[in-house]
Structure formats: structure tokens, C-alpha cells
Image (cartoon, rainbow, N blue to C red):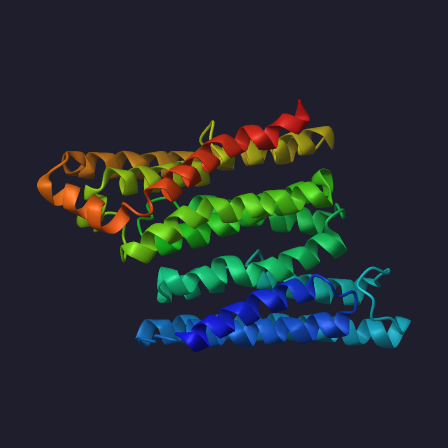
Length: 346
């Protein structure tokens, strides 16, 4: 327990340390240190499937780091410069960008992310879904956030399509989180050139808030399949939190998932990317249909479980009574956050 706490603290400090560096040499070394700590934290309780998931994560990270390192070294030999802020030649920029795209699980290779999450518990997946993406996403925003190119446009569109289409008929909560992550990051990549640095960081944080409730629920209830967790949803508060999180991930108004997509949509309209906007509307409707159908099935399946019984009252008293104020606060945050985000636009 003490060792785990030490590694978690070291991980957080390392992430903040990377954000203060401007040299690619120290940034790359810190990324490798963070990856090593993530592997240690994920490998605490390994089963056969966990070993497979961790192996795929490690291989993907090693490939991405190799691309980044080659790009850094090539740039140094051609420009004698390690700074992250200066200009890039096309080859070094492409190599570094490819490594970052692999690390954040965007197209061209997002499938390792789904396989890794599927083989790990949701508690372990927290490190891959959230912690492992903070630094690569920050670096992407710094070096390519304002770049509007046909390649990045293809990457964003393909990521949205993969996440939106493959989530249909999914009931495994780990795959739902993985595919929603790919789709939402595709939205963010498309909107970055129109949003600016501060709003881009805010939207990335908003995505982390949307997936947090599902990860929190799983820390109390070992949920793998949403249709095989009957005893978990005896508590109406847990059921409401899961439904709210799924609808927010689907972009259902007035939840925060809708309004952050709306902000990106307005930015693309101002940039006159009408075809991209039309494509995003179609993908949003497809993914929202999948999430609404999932929520409808959940409500139909657990409708009779929502009635209070002595057993459910006991569960509420013993397991979640201490956390109830925090759950309510989180729900209100998810509900009202969209209005807060949208307010600067009007």
C-alpha cells in the first residue's frame, strides 16, 4: 500500500514536471519515466488477460517513444535545437506527431488501446484512460494545436468514425470507455485549430470529468458488463450516476458532453469546415442513438430493482451513505458544467 502510494505521488509529480520543461531531451526522458511507473502500477494484480493487455500497452508505448526519439534526434542533427517551441522540419515533425498520436490512441492505430483496456480491470484502466494521456495530449496541443492540415483532419475524422461506429451494440463498460475515448479525442483533434490553447485544455479536462463517474462506480462495484450487474443497480443513486455518465458521453443535451461538442462545432463553422460539420453531426447521431439505446435497455432491465427494499436500504446505508454528498456534487457538476462552458460564447 505504501509503495503504491509512493508510485502514485511520483507519477503525479512527474506529470507536472514535464509540463515545466521546454527541452525535448528532458521531456522524452520524463515520458519514459512516467511510462515505467504506469507499467508498475498496472502490473500490481496480473491475470492472464491483464498480462496480454499490459503487453500491448507496453509495445504500443515503446513504438511511440521510438518514433518520438528518432524525430528528436533527427531535428537536433539538422537544426542543432532541442527546444519544443521552435520550428520543425517536415520529417522530424511527422515522426514526433506520429508518436504522440499513437500514445493518445488516435488513428492510425487506436486498436491497441481497446485491447489493452479490455484486458485490464477498470481500476487499472484509469491509468491508461486518464493518466497516460495527459502529457502526450499537452505536447500535441503545444506543437500542433493550431495546425490545420489535411492529414490531421483525416486523423480526427477517422478517430470519430472508429469510436462512434464500433460502440454500437457494445455492453462491456471497458470497451465503451475505450471507444468513447477514441471518439472524443477525434473531436478534440478536429477542434484544436479553432479553439486556442486554453479552451483546448479545458475541453480535455471536461472529457476526463465525463469518464470519472463510471470509473468511480467501478471502484465500489466490479462492473464489467452493464447487463450483468443487477445487484449494483439496486441503489438508485448508482443507477442514476451510470445513466447520467453514459448520456453525457453520448452528447445528450443539456449535459456537458453536448456543450463541449457544440463549442467545437461552432469553431469549425467559423472556419467554414462545412463538410466536417456535416460528418460530425451524422457520427454524433449514431453514437447518441447507441448510448440512448443502452440507457433504455438498462432502465428496462433494472426498473424493478429501483424500488426500495430493506436490502437496498441496507446497501445505501452501508456502502454509499458517506459518499452521497460527493456523488450529488459530481452529478450537478456534470449537469451544469455545459452551461458554464457555453457562457463565454454568448
